[in-house]
Structures are given as C-alpha cells and as structure tokens.
Length: 189
Image 1 (spheres, helix red, strand yellow):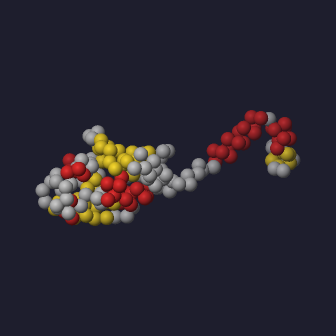
Image 2 (cartoon, helix red, strand yellow; image 1 turned 135 degrees about the vertical axis):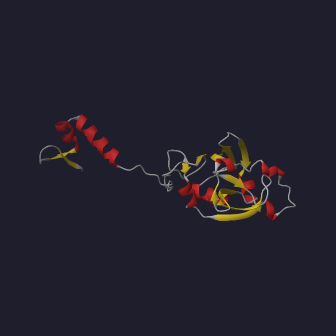
Image 3 (cartoon, helix red, strand yellow; image 1 turned 60 degrees about the vertical axis):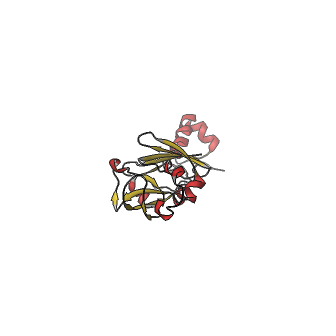
C-alpha cells in the first residue's frame, strides 16, 4: 500500500492522507506530479527548430516536434541525409547543382504515410501530388542551388526539383506542376 507523509513525520495511508490533508492537498499533489512529468512522445524524435521555420508538415505523420506538426528550420533540414542533383530545369537557363534531401528520405524521417501530399507555396500556390509519383521520379526538397541558399526571389528557400537532365526524352510536363518553389507547407493524406 502506498504511504504518503503530510506536514508531520507520521506516515499515513492514502485514505488517511486525504482525511488529514484534505482533498485540495491531494489535488495539488497530483497536479504537481503530473506537471513535473515530461509528456511522452514515443514517436516524436524530431529536434525542434531554433531558427525561423521554413517548412511545416501536417497530416499523416508519426513524428512531430510541435503538437501535431513537424517544423523545420534550415539547420534541422540540413541535418537530414544530404543529396545533390545536377540538372537543368524547365524554369531557368543552364545547369545547376541542387543540394537538399530526397523526398523519400524526408518521408521516412517524419514517418509519413498515405498516398497524397498537398504542397503549399508562400504565394499560396497549392498542388496535390501522388507520393508514388514524387518518389518514382526522384523528387528532392532543395535548399541550395550551386552551394548558395536560395532566396525567395530565386525560388527559395525550398524548391521541389526533379532530375530533368537525367532523362531529357521523358515527358516531364505532368511533373512540372509538382515542382513547387517557395515551398513552405506540406500536408500528407
């Protein structure tokens, strides 16, 4: 039987503790104990962003760092497995080297599930994408172009890019709408 001490060095049973100390004392004790326990987040092992949040993820994800979402600043994104891609884009001239995280690695990192994701840009451009299509075609969340962070003026800070140059004969038209620049939110469904 649990034994508690109240004001005196005399030990009491829990029932006697309530009688002597009162219900208010018991409630305060419970609140003190509950308040001192760190909430468990078995699946949430994501570090919290310390800088400005550049990407917020909601929906069918099992790992979070802010209530029901996963938020990323540049440092948290850069801590993920780094990938580079050298490619031309249909939206700019010349070949660039993009640095970022493969979409498949990103999904694994946040425990994403479902079949679709809504990608949302800073300018409120929105598109629903099939997750299999993004993964199959090598989509990457890029945060650098030619070793420099991308500004909002230059389609950043985040841009979904594809390896367009790897297969120039492929019809990329259907994927070009998924190449969201100014990316700042994603909702997995």
